[in-house]
Image 1 (cartoon, rainbow, N blue to C red):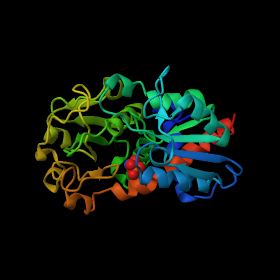
Image 2 (cartoon, rainbow, N blue to C red; image 1 turned 90 degrees about the vertical axis):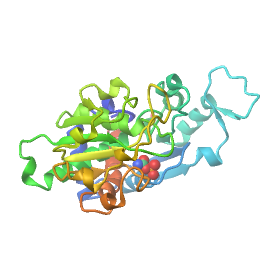
Image 3 (cartoon, protein in one colour; image 1 turned 135 degrees about the vertical axis):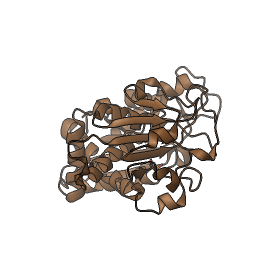
Length: 326
Ligand code: CP
């Protein structure tokens, strides 16, 4: 693996999942692998889980991890080619990224979409310039359109949960991604990425349900069953992934605030005693009810803890492939 920004960067999804579970069983399995390597974790936006789990993962592999909150501590970066920089930006990415490429063996970036200009966001303008100008392997810690470390973690957790029961013998799980309400306009990244990974994995009966107007980009959802009937989608579901996203077509808009879309125990009763997932952070009693989050069907804490093993598997594969330095 030379970089990790989308599912296509992974040669064998199930092999990567098994690698992550091997690290979960033995966190220091490859503690010498990254010795002498330095990883930069750059945050242009906030994070709790991604920041800390990736740091822990890097340290488990013997790497030195340095976190840089670009949004708070760095110079304001310019990403537009040919910009006349007489405004608020101080340093062009063409100048900053090569410097980072000399300080680090591997660079991880978190950057959110602006949710104003769909074309700009979906071109991954910021992430692609780090790839273009840094000259070292790049790992996405969530970009304008995708959150691959989260999706790998989600798949690890689904497989782990399936392995803990005999009820899936030779049966594909029914996995439902359901839209949920939110008070703010939220990126499509997690929903895009979950859809992309579920479709690439191909071992689930994958259904997406959302109100009219919340259609995601088909490049990620093609292969899934899509319905506006949440109750029908939830019927016999084994896993329910709850997530809000803002509209893709009416880009960045909130079109629905109907609290009937919130996941509750009443809706859980429609499922096959489904496990409930959410990437966190979650707005309690807006997206998901307390009773679900605090109940026995919730996988949210287990999922968040698995972020370490997903990151460790990805960093390990990149070190193995590239030596993590050019
Ligand atoms: N799920 C997730 O990415 O959490 P953070 O935003 O806290 O990193």
